[in-house]
Image 1 (cartoon, rainbow, N blue to C red):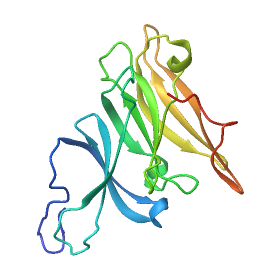
Image 2 (image 1 turned 135 degrees about the horizontal axis):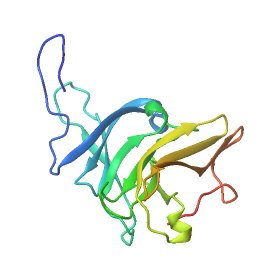
Image 3 (image 1 turned 45 degrees about the vertical axis):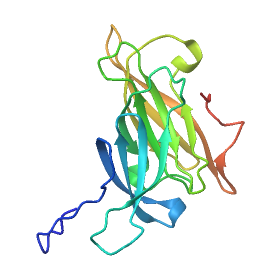
Image 4 (image 1 turned 120 degrees about the vertical axis):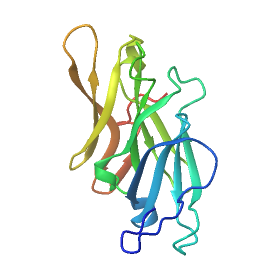
Length: 187
C-alpha cells in the first residue's frame, strides 16, 4: 500500500500464494470496515482484514471461500465484489467465473462472505441445470430494490449474448437473506 502523502509503501499481505484481482470494499457484515479480497492461486477468494491497525503490519487473512471440491471448473477467474464493493442486503457478495476464458466450458458463481464462516457458494448459470457446455464469461452484478442479479456474456458459435441470472438473494424489508423460495440452484 502506498501512502501518496509520504511516498512510503508497505506490504498488505505477506502470506504465501499468488494473488490476482485485488479489491478493497466496505464489508457490511463488519459494519462497513474496509477489507481486501484477492483471487488466491486462482483457487479461492481470500479475504484480509487490518487487525493491527498500525499502518505498517500486513493484514490478516480471515477467510477463504472456495468452490466445491467437485466443481466442474475449479479455476477461479474474474472475481469481484458486487455493487461496487458495498455488498447487498447486509452481506458481502462476489461474482466469479469458473474456468479460464479460453476453455470451451466455464461456469458463473456467486460467493457470499459471512463473518462466522458460513459462506454461501452457488452456481448461477444455466449449465448447472442443463449440463450444456458453453463459454460463460465475465460475471457482473446488479442490485435492485429487493433482488440481486448476476449477468454474464455467453460466447458460443454465434453472436455473444447477455444472460441474466436471479441470484436467489431476497432483500425485501424484514427478509434480507437467502430463502429457499428464491434461492438459485446450489452446487
